[in-house]
Amino acid sequence: MCQQKTIYTTTPLTLLHSITMKQLIFILLALQTCLLSSAQKSISVMVLGIAQDAGYPQIGCSKICCAQVKEGKQAGAFPVSWAVMDSAAHQWYLIEASPNIKDQLNYFQKATGNFFNYYPDGIFLTHAHMGHYTGLMQLGREAANTKDIPVYCLPKMAQFLRANGPWSQLVQLNNIKIQTLTVDSSISIQSNLNVTAFTVPHRDEYSETAAFIIGNSNKKYLFVPDTDKWSLWKTPLVSYLKQVNIAFLDATFLSSTELPNRNINEIPHPLVPETIGLLQQEPSLKTKIVLIHFNHTNPLIWNEEQRKKYSSKYVGIASVGAVY
Ligand SMILES: [Zn+2]
Ligand SMILES: [Zn+2]
Ligand SMILES: [Zn+2]
Image (cartoon, rainbow, N blue to C red; front, top):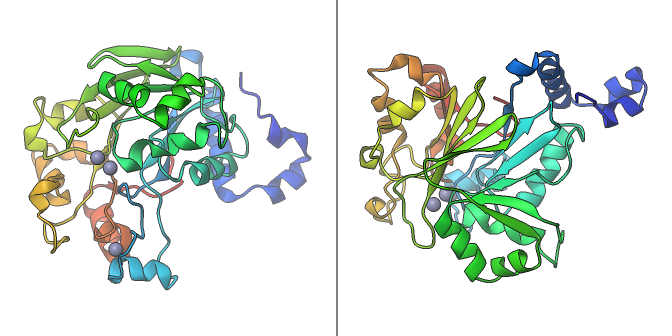
């Protein structure tokens, strides 16, 4: 039901003074969702983090990219994470448990004016690299000591969590409840939300790497925060793009010269121009793309001019708090 609990506990005038513009936009979106007929009920997604696993600034970096944060010229950024919101059902799902999960949950609570429960109704994990799952530790006995939060992931990831501390303790103490997904098989999380996980090529040291299609008949989102080159995909990216309304895609690097001291072949993410190049023949798909998972060296996270250049000419650039 579409009750807006907290925001209606005060007078309208006080309310207008106490909510921020972002909260107001969210409330309007939620109301719009509530007014839709049940067949049209929609979901929306809020971006909670945009950086590669290590966040921005990155530890030990004194180059121009990260120096700007220390000098107060650029805002820092947490690792990639999203909130999938079903306003009509008052439920929300977190995608990725980043090392900054605490800050991201606090941010989400504030941005949505306490509209949802503080803890998500479920967490989706793509893979076992540090930026994508280590925030789970905040749910354990030493911190939140949560009860049975469903954690959705593919089988190797599930096994990794069950078999290795400290994650295994979260399972044993029922802080989290692992829900193992099957590759390429759609499941209903609740009446208005379906999820399909598929695997993508990536460095799978501890787990496979998942991408998710999440949505319903009204709206679908594709989440691909981490992958190796598109050319290695068995099913072309374009065919997935045709199935969805919005696609969040790995944009770790803008160019292959960003890491002069490392062999970029060891970390073969698709370069942003390669992603854009893929869509030369499919210009209508470009408007669906939102780039995310920026390395600290990627100018799309630290250079406003580059951000403007790419967002105006080509595709969307993810920013924290943006709702899709
Ligand atoms: Zn990553
Ligand atoms: Zn840096
Ligand atoms: Zn990764």
